[in-house]
Image (cartoon, rainbow, N blue to C red; front, side, top):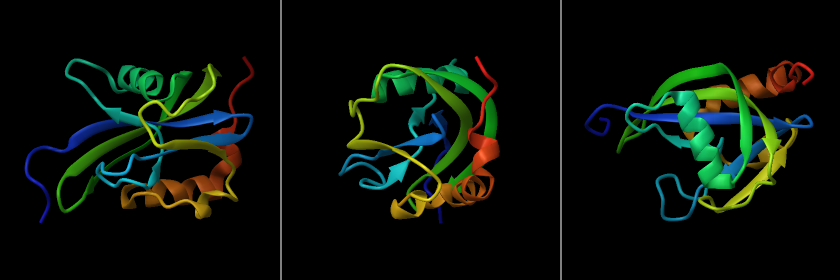
Length: 142
């Protein structure tokens, strides 16, 4: 049985910088508190997923990114709620990350991903990242 109501719409970023991926730790006491995730957040009414992602990354970490293509689109059902997640490849542009609305953050490579606990919704994406890291992490030259 899943939580009632329509799925919560979330935009998340696969934010890369110099071949490393930015991950954040959810605050204790929040849904899935203590787990690591790809930064982002809930989409507001009238906002595109890309706009949501830029806003959330600025609010949560104080960073600016360039949003590229959709990397994954999935719906996951937790016992208490359902989430519709859209993950976009992003390139970090400016400002060093700060833990503003998250507990912690880290830049990681593919060999480090297994050292972090992620929500169940991210399992398929994590496997894709591990197998296709080079393709996913590279961008055209600016």
